[in-house]
Image (cartoon, rainbow, N blue to C red; front, side):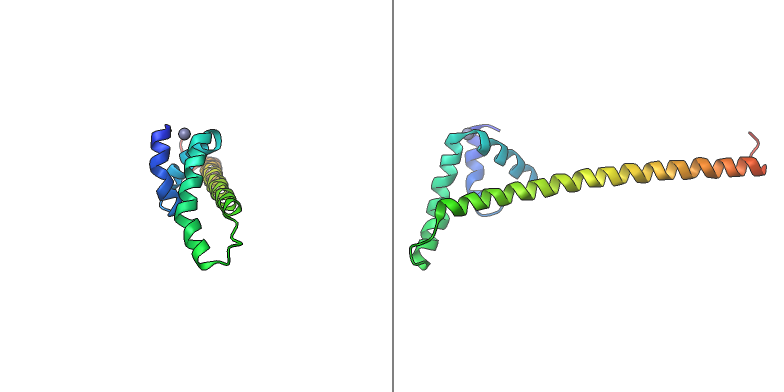
Length: 117
Ligand SMILES: [Zn+2]
């Protein structure tokens, strides 16, 4: 992802509008690109911070809030990845179980004389 692409996703990210694939690329870029992280901080401050400061008593911790938000996104991605791996593993196991069951069944039929090979 380029900086230009990442910048376009800053506002959607703040508004929780990214797909999981976009979020993955975005987080990856934000982690290694200081410029875009700064861009995100500024937008976050303007978008969320000012609103919160308005209704809060002024003790609102904006940097901590964004940090928590980013950690939350990372956790979402980790859960998604774990789910994908699990889905793959279960799918593979089920295919293998089906194969083994079929082979056993063929053997049983074979031994019982139902098959001519
Ligand atoms: Zn960048």
